[in-house]
Image (tube, rainbow, N blue to C red; front, side, top):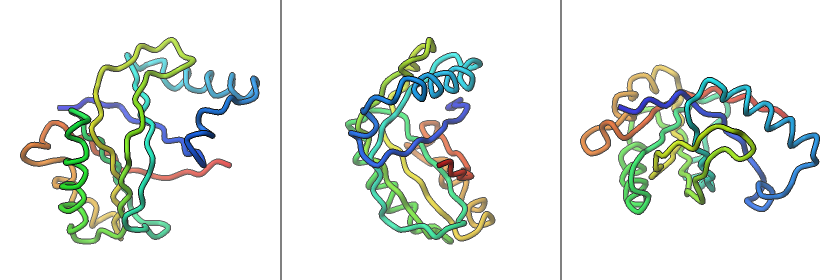
Amino acid sequence: KLDLAGFPELWFDSYDDLKAPYPWALQRKFEADSENWLRHIAAVTRVVTEPNEVIAAPEGSAKAFIVNVGDRAAGETWAEAWQRRVTKLPGVCGYLRHKILEQVGAPGTGIPELQLPVAGVAEVSFATEQALAKSAGELAGKGADAGNVALYIVEDYRLV
């Protein structure tokens, strides 16, 4: 069973923007915030993805974030099969599939890197929280996915 405590999600306009250096004061603020958030965590991994909106989710929908752990080479097969299966669930109104670009430790912190290969990442939105709750067992993984999938119920906060 996966024992992942959670994750923050940061969005950039492009991969180049992610790699661009920040002004020193801003970068130090990000690093201090990461260290405060991570200080009780034994290890961390950072997964950089490129999102692909398959089904646009309406504002205010109930969202689940799914992380599949395993061989990244098998990740594309997992993502395709997962998408076909999950988008048929009752109440699904949005689907965002992530292409993994890289996976690294948390730069700028003293936290050790978590050695946990991520094979796939997806976000599924439901029309209601009740529809999401009814499908949680299916989202948490069955068969080959059992024990390799971490499921998070997400509440978005946008900071600008």
